[in-house]
Image 1 (cartoon, rainbow, N blue to C red):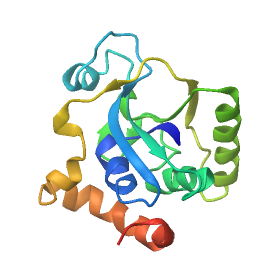
Image 2: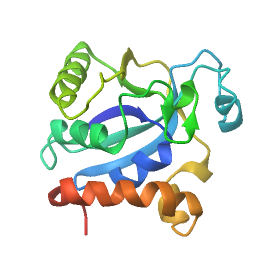
Image 3: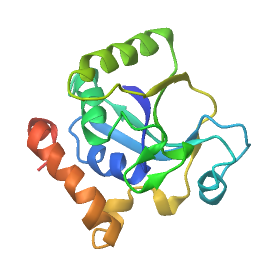
Image 4: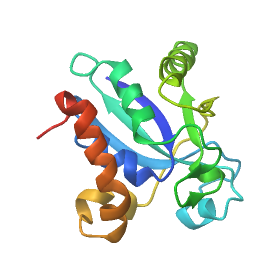
Length: 174
C-alpha cells in the first residue's frame, strides 16, 4: 500500500472521487504544511496557520497505478491557479503535493511535467516535504457520501465526479 498526500482545493472534492476509486483503501481529509499545532477547520480557514486542506489517499499499486492516482489529481482541480480553486480562495486551497521520500518528490515532479500539456497556463502546484498531517474533524470525512444533497455537492462536487467518470471510468467503482 502507498499513501499520497494531495491538496487540490477543498478536500471534499478529492475525497469524493478517490472514495469511489478502485484500489483505494482509505481517504482521510486533513491539514498539513502549516506552522500552527493541532489546527482545526476554522483556524485553517482563517489563512493564518499556513496549512493546506489535503487528502491522504492510501491505495494498492497492484490495483491502480500510482501514475493514474496522480493524473486523476491533476484532472480534478485547476493546478494553474495560485491559492484558489473556484470560489475557494486562500493558501489553504493551494494546489499541493506533500512527499515522504525523495522518490515520491521525483514522482510528483514527473507527474507535473506529464500533465503540463493539458493546461494553457503553467502548473503552480507546490511540491513540499510532508510535515505533520492532522486529520480533519469527523464532519469532513467522506463528506459527499454523508451529504449528497448538499448544495456544495450538487454545484461543485458532482461536476468533478462527472469529469472523473468521463476520463477515468475504468478506475471507478460503479
